[in-house]
Image 1 (cartoon, rainbow, N blue to C red):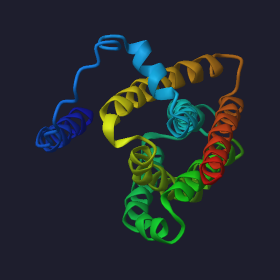
Image 2: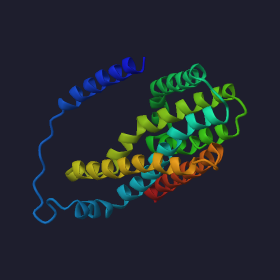
Image 3: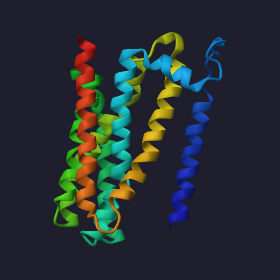
Length: 231
């Protein structure tokens, strides 16, 4: 069954790759001073304050999400004794809520703006690991999984639009490249930190609360970024 799921995921990724391959953008002119110097290009992009504030907030958010992803099943199995069937139900509810949220979040973007929706999604996601760490049973996770699915949709749907809004038109590809490097480093570090926190002798619940704290920091950074941008 896992092999079938991996094959389906591979086929879906190939469809995504095909669509991305249809996008053709003109190459930007080479910069003689910074060509081939990744650190120099990163420093140049970080001098743009709107992008820098956004990048720090999203990097913290991705670090938190990377921590939460492996900690949740550890808590479900270690503390709640959940089996594969129960975990599948919780994950299915999360996925269904994400789909429904993705279909409706654009209405909220129109009403309150993409920056505010992203900030609400990041701040609200704190509740998922935090409330999970206090849940006495696997079935108590059902409402939190549904809530997290909607909040996850608020994050994923608005993330790229917010990224585009804080990058200059003239050199956007360079900014997006730096963004991808930093975000993927955060996603890589998240599970490693979570694994160290969840070693024997440290409860998964405590590790989830630490991850919730990191998520809170990310949400606050995104909220203050929005206020700074308005000023």
